[in-house]
Length: 120
Image (cartoon, rainbow, N blue to C red):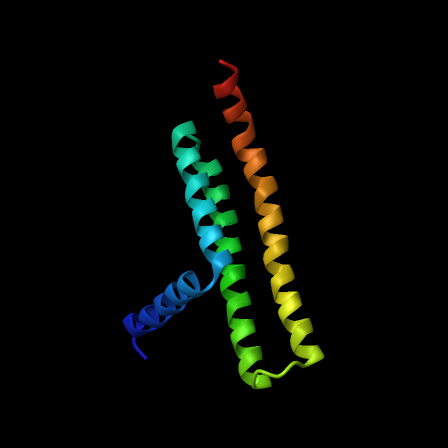
């Protein structure tokens, strides 16, 4: 399989998740808001890198969560199974951990320059 075809499949997965998952839309919107604020605050390169990494980890976790949910649904044929619930809950928990950590990262990185801007 060629590189461009692989990129096309990856992009299709991202677009699917954005279109079908409410939380992915929330994460994308929040990430864009954080990046906009970072631009307004004129952050240093290292701060940008930290924020971009945090945003990417949340989006990646949401993509993996979406994949786990779809594969689990496929394997269970739409019927409830306690192990399927555990798999979905664990994948969702991974997103929660990443999102929570990203909030704290955002506060640590954006908080001081935002405070200085607002204190003037």
